Every structure is written in C-alpha cells, then in structure tokens.
Image (cartoon, rainbow, N blue to C red):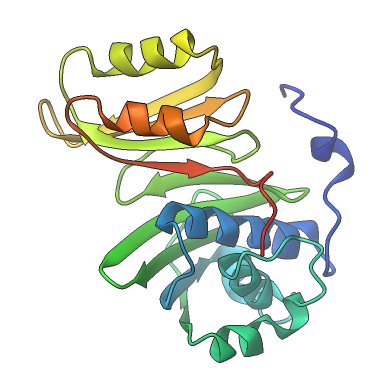
Length: 225
C-alpha cells in the first residue's frame, strides 16, 4: 500500500473507543458538511454492515453528528453531539439497511440546508481513514487525506485539459483524479486531489471555465468549529 503520511500509521487523536467507528465517522461527517458548504439543517444518515449493527454501542452516531457539526476527531463535545445538534436546530434521522455494501463500515448521508442538498456514500476503512465512493449519484472516489476539489460540470471536449492546465499554471500538483459522467455530452463530476490547498482566487478562476456548474473544496486540515 502506498505510504501517505504518519497519520496512516499511528492514527488520529480522537474521542471514543474505536478509530473506525468514531474517528473515521467524524471525518465522514466533516467531508459531507464541506460538500454542502455549511452546517446542515436536516440530515438522513443510513448505516450499513457493522455500522448498522453497532453504531449506538460504539458511539458512531454521535461521531457522525459531531462531524456534521464540524467537530474535530478529538473534540470533547462529541459525547454530547446529539444534544448540541438539537440545540442548533439540526434535524437528524438514523436509518439502518441490510443491503450489501462494499465495506462493512459504510454510511450514506443526505443532508440539506435551505435549497441546497448533498448526498454522499463513504466508508471508514480503519485507523481513522475514510474513502468516499459516491457524491450526488456520481461514482467518484477520494480519501480526503489531501485537499480535494469536487467539480460539477458538463461533459465537453477539452474540459479536463482546461482544468489541469489552469492548475499547472498555478503550480498546483495533482496527486489523483477521478471522473464519472451520466453520458456523452451530459452532466459529469471530476474529483482532483492536490498536494496543497487550492486558494479561493484559483477556485473562482476555475469556476469561470465554460460549462463548470459548481466547485466544492474538501480540506480536513482546516480547523473545525
């Protein structure tokens, strides 16, 4: 397995008994919150496999809520996350599913705030690490270990070249890229992991490219609330 960082070996600083069921769950919650761009007002959280069987006993539910509230993995407020969410007016519903998932610690989020809504499927894969496998019904993968751009756009010739050229011109190195599309000349999503966080000005410039609808940045190195 490719070495990523010291976090992959020693795990995160965290609250809770299990890095998979708590630290990883917090990180999944923070990722989907960053995709939404703000604190959600409603969240439906569906758990699969081991998560579905043990989420209450391992505190996975509280960790997922804590992530939605932008808590860090070591935030002492995690045990009271449900009460904090209620105080903030966040409505949260937990569901369990017997459907088979690719990983036993899998969760699906559907979260919203006002007119904005995001769906995401991800898994806690051990040691506090996570893998995202679906965003808004697009099968795209990323780990959130590195700063990540999630770009919604129309599928057109030259789109990827335009994006990568602009990043390269600004000395942004690409570590990983994934793309899914609904079909030729239809909606598409491109995910790009970069070595450094992409500044707001460059994201705005990327957003001005023809047929890009939306860009979200996921960067778990940014401190939570």
